[in-house]
Amino acid sequence: MGLSRETVDQLLAESRTHVCPGAPETCVKIVAIADLPTRFGEYQVVAFWNDGARQDHAAFVHGNVYERENVPVRIHSECLTGDAIGSLRCDCRDQLIASLEKIGREEAGIVLYLRQEGRGIGFANKIRAYQLQDAGYDTVEANEALGFRPDERDYEVAAHMLGSLHVGSISILTNNPEKLDDLRRHGVKIVRRIPLVIAPTSQNREYLETKRMKMGHLLNYEQGDAIADPPGESPR
Image 1 (cartoon, rainbow, N blue to C red):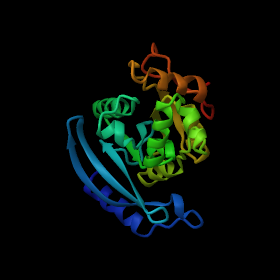
Image 2 (cartoon, one colour):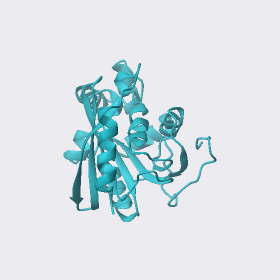
Image 3 (cartoon, rainbow, N blue to C red):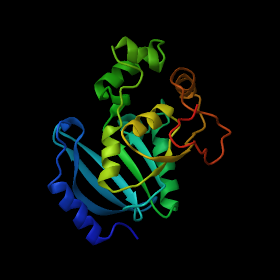
Image 4 (cartoon, rainbow, N blue to C red):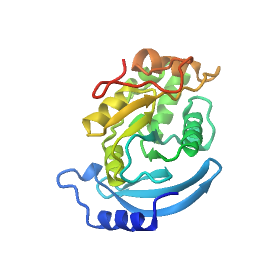
């Protein structure tokens, strides 16, 4: 059972009158909700639009998440090369598929799909970074050589999307402690962290090791299904 027709109508009505004074870049509205049967289970797709940034985002909702607590959530940043083309330079597609499969087996859950290509630097700059990596830079060094931080993403939009869906608290599928910190800064209540570790391949092993060593990602390939974090604290 997904979001009911009454709930869908309510969410759309709320968004029609919703405004975010002083925060146009992160203010998103629900503009449409439709059923989406997938190979990973029955989902509904929720289209969000951001007037300030002129950008859309998506939530793929399985089951009824409205006003629920401890909802399994994956916040996935767009990766055209990985998600659509199957690039082996990263583990993005594998993480997305694993998330959809896992949440599709749960009673309810959400995959948020954010338009934050290349850890927030955009598609063209991501390919520039790839070019530098081909010349010997690691993923952090390449971003910095282009004038960016190792990770330029922000999760205020994700927090807003969860609020728009009336989600009370979440269990988040992630290996990135900075994501937890940023979500909590934006008011998201996180009950626990669920590791989402994909075994490395010969093509992405160095990339994943750089994320572990330089960016603090929690990549223990022998982890169990879930790690609970004390309320208000981030995993270290």
